[in-house]
Amino acid sequence: MFPLFVFEEPEKPKRSAEPAQQTPLAVIEAELAAADLILINSSGGKDSQTALEEVVRTARRLCIPKHKLVVVHADLGVVEWPGTRELAQEQAKHYGLRFEVVRHKNANGESHDLLEHILKRGMWPDSQARFCTSDFERGPVQTLMTRYAQAAGRRHRLKPGQKKYRVVSCLGMRAEESDARNLLPNWTLNTSASNGLRDVFNWLPIFKLTKDEVWARIRASGVQHHWAYDLGMPRLSCCFCIFSPKSALILAGKHNRELLLRYVAAEQKMKHTFRHGFSLAEVLAAVDANQQPGPVLDWAK
Ligand code: SF4
Image (cartoon, rainbow, N blue to C red; front, side, top):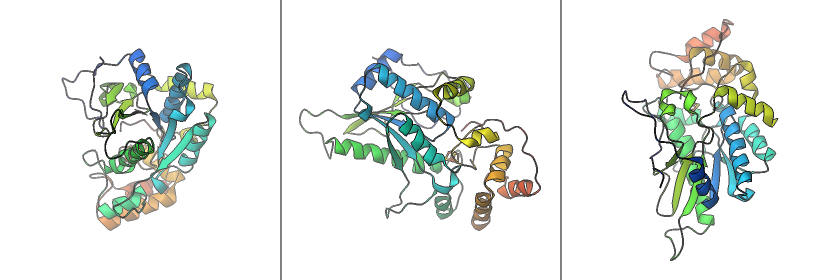
């Protein structure tokens, strides 16, 4: 049998860390054919849209019925580049797939965008407390998995003869993105999303593709990509990502000044800078001085 790995956020590679053993495609294909639900996580970005295309291509080859494929977008609210959710929806529609939007909800069932959530917590997320992804992406997607499993009769406990609901969760991470990602396995048992009623496996369908190959696939597909890339942004999702370099923040600020003002006001209110020793007030000053960001290099998340 193939190896099972626990999949969580990529961690910084340890000096002695070796790349994980990769699962052969034939094994993954057998799992896909047996899955009840193939969930394609889409940020609307270039890697998500290429992962979506790859999953659709594979599913067609395996004659997997379309109703088993669902695209899910974790909506972070106003912090995303404008039009991101709509684009993710268009991309799903292009392939004729069901599209779901999930949002973070607090204990009272109220929805807030990421910036409101940050203000309530009184702190910015960082690599040690990455609640932006755990609260706004992983958690709401797992709630969706529960909804689908329940709709398929997996409630409370399995009935006699009933099998666990099988979910394959597809993510657009690529080995080339960072040293940490290069160490990831392409197929894992996601133990934190699995429970007594369901097994969840994470699959990285474009793990080995390079950035150039991703863009070539997008051009060949004819599917629309987000305009932020044409401005020079290497990544989508939050306009102001906690991991992005200053040049990316300036470029994003030039095109999203109102949002930048809200971030700067949040820093002042919380008395806590965006990153240790770095305030977005510097970015606002650069934007207002019409400072050019220069080439924006990609960053690891
Ligand atoms: S884009 Fe950056 S700030 Fe936004 S959710 Fe992802 S890691 Fe967090």
